[in-house]
Image 1 (cartoon, rainbow, N blue to C red):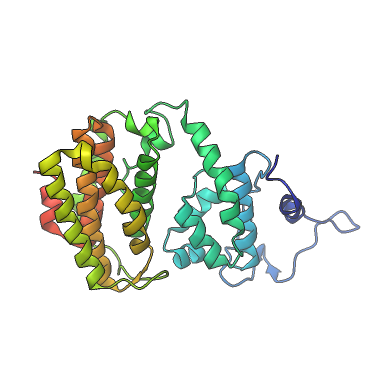
Image 2 (image 1 turned 120 degrees about the horizontal axis):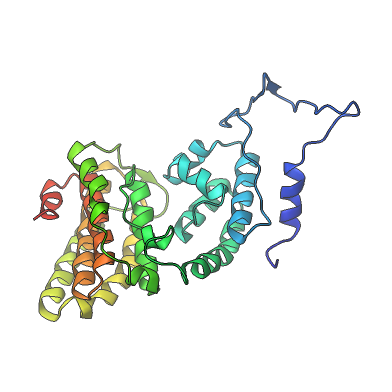
Length: 311
């Protein structure tokens, strides 16, 4: 494979466990009672990876290599990138495709010098290849956006993937069917009304109240365009705006107050994507935007916008 090189050899060497002359494996320095005494590293032995299986598995093996070098657990790395440790684990095991934004945050948190971002185009090509023959009922893009994410930052990643995939005009997502049962889980989670943790972030450009006000102003502009011209005319413009302007703000640096205002404004933009998708005869896609808009509205503490979703 083209992506196989010295990095792959390093991963294979890292997964081999040297044996002593007596045939027993020596305990590595700092290991006692089967647990490695390293700062931030979980004591249990991780599952062996298969980097030669695909570009995605190779990416996961490389991610685990750098995480181990930096002596970080999956949860500790997730804290640095504002993602869940479970998501990091799924990417390492080749069970989840990383977005470009997440890949860049991982590179920054692990100080790789851009190693993961250089691998990402092959991973994205593999994802597109897998999605091409798929149907709306299978795993992957067909299920994207139907679940209620545990944290606001995880929700941002889902929305980012929705926006990016929609902008790429992937036929699988555009032709996805409306799934009535998909509302059960999100509705239950919304009714439980769990308050999210403090929504602060310390990466990227500084985001202030003027940025949030600008987003609300654009919400008004896109709403007016939708009313005057119909969703089909303004949808592509909205998708370019959220990908180029809104996503960098969501991955910026802000305190809790600005963070909640940012989530609420993004919820309204996601809501507009839903209405415009519905007007463009993309009901399945609209459903996904509606679910994510509700989740973002809850994260932003905007009860009026939350209730508007059920109107």
